[in-house]
Image 1: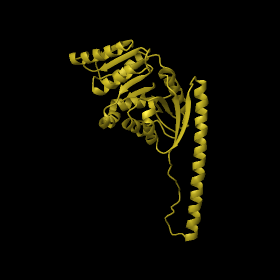
Image 2: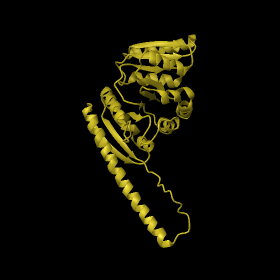
Image 3: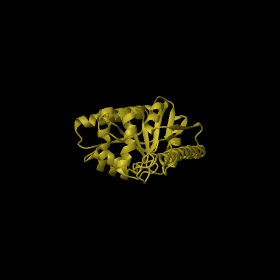
Image 4: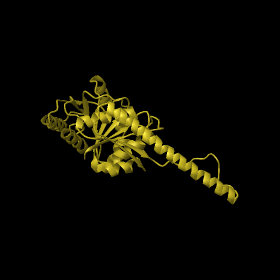
Length: 283
């Protein structure tokens, strides 16, 4: 695991993704890979071609469609190269030292799977090229990546600036403990004030779990403020984030079989959709 992989698609969030990935590369001392995936697009036509047409006409039409498809593929390839070159120039100006450009054909998730063993962190925009800021769109690409890969995912939701603090949404479960362990072992957030927040009832068992997580982070050099706040998860985290001017949110994903449940759950999906700060998802 060596590289930070930034998924660049030429959308409005590409510059934000690049900025976030440069910050992560500096924090972790890792090379940066800017990747563009050329995903096959379905050929669309507004005409019904299923009617009865002559053989010669059909062959001529197919030849034109093949030529059009080839031209479209060539233009997409050239566009992708330009997108990557622009991102590289931007990343270099932002301070990145080791930058690799990678353009691959095929599905984004499949490409990331191929690169998983050599990646430390994956950086994505909340919405890709041509997508709107809708729950369906977010679920269609963020969830697929998180469900399939086991690397941390940094989600850029808008203009990125280096965070000066971060909050961990902690619930005492296995996924949250795994997130604590990943954060404690990584230089990504080291040196930033940490707010460890648990929503709900302050039972002795939950206090003990919070204190255990608190101590684990402090042992690794983090300055931690730990709190249990009565109330439901989403309102508590949102209010705490606003009152304490939190600039990055970290949270754990469930085990592989439960990732879908994690992402369609009302509180977490609302956090991802409505958040105005970057999110770090940890497996």
